[in-house]
Amino acid sequence: MDISSLALFAGVYFLAVASPGPAIAALVARSLSSGFRRSLPFLAGIVAGDLVWFTLSALGLSVLMQSFHGVFVTIKYAGCAYLLYLAWKAWTAPAEAPKPSAAARGEGARLFLGGIALTLGNPKVMVFFLSILPLVIDLNAMTTLAFVEVAALIAPIITGTLMAYAYAADRARRLVASPRAMRWINRTTGGVMAGAAAAIATRS
Image (tube, rainbow, N blue to C red; front, side):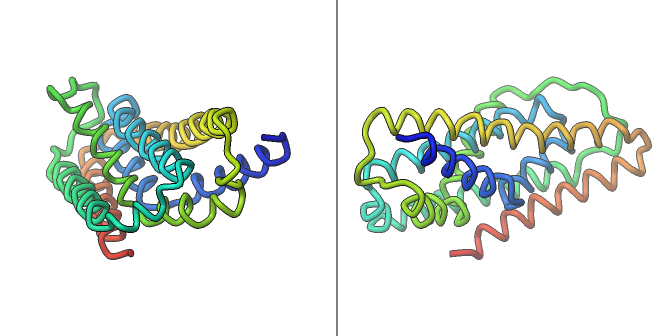
């Protein structure tokens, strides 16, 4: 692909990724409640989900995806259910000052899969890759090299943007020390996660 097309895609994609939505809300809430490092598997799942959507779009499987709409609806509600679980965990977390804690066994894998499920079922992501992406890139003329070039743009753009959100949330978390403030943060993040789940579940 020529530089101008790649630059156009990079700009449009960055704006789509950076605009607040359910995925960013859930990631920020996760980082606020558990810290930057323990939000990274969830972040990686979101990145992987975007790459899956791009691959399916590039392979021309949009018609197939619409035919198997029920599968994506199931994935969507699975992601919503996991978000609600995280929301409950955050809401009921003890009101203690932030301190390092070990991740539970298997937590990283569960968070990664939860991030993928959230992304595959997120209507905002679906609209971008099925409706907006074809307006920016001619998917019918996409070569293997062009696919690699676009994927090489997607990964750092979404990773860097989400890491910035997660890091900012973690820094805000570290400034808080009082149990009362931690209780407020825990319940706010729980509410945000529950709201993100509801937003995804009710949007088509």
